[in-house]
Image (cartoon, rainbow, N blue to C red; front, side, top):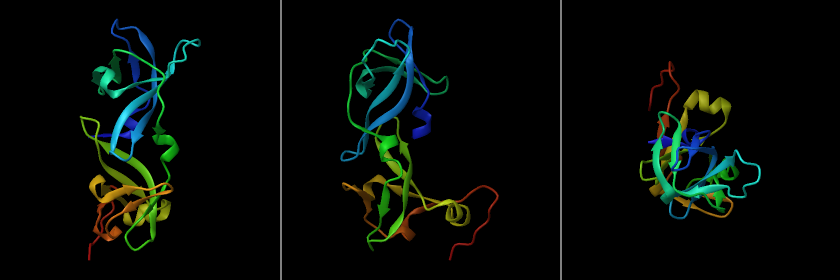
Length: 164
């Protein structure tokens, strides 16, 4: 499983092993819950090509922070950095937090999201993880099909907590 931060600042190479840029963000299709592309910052100032689709990846080496791509192009879509911070609403119509991070599998499908409830509540209760199957993307928020108490909890290290 990869997180959004794992996709940032990866070196991008073409098939001839020449560095052409580095990754800056990912493009999301929230209706299919998948990553469709990666945007990049070019080394060349004159290139208008700004990214590549996932299908153009020849090899992705996250340990060495390197991606080899077949082709770059001008791509458009929903950037995760623009959507990060969107409100999450549960089935009782209460705002339970904001979108903080994504969990992406090896086939670039989004499996879960990380919900942040604020600095103090994150420290006391921990962040929450909601599965993508329980979510629906709306225009101004993400709808969680269940109560927030039915989601997974990520408790910070060194903090013990009794669950009632």
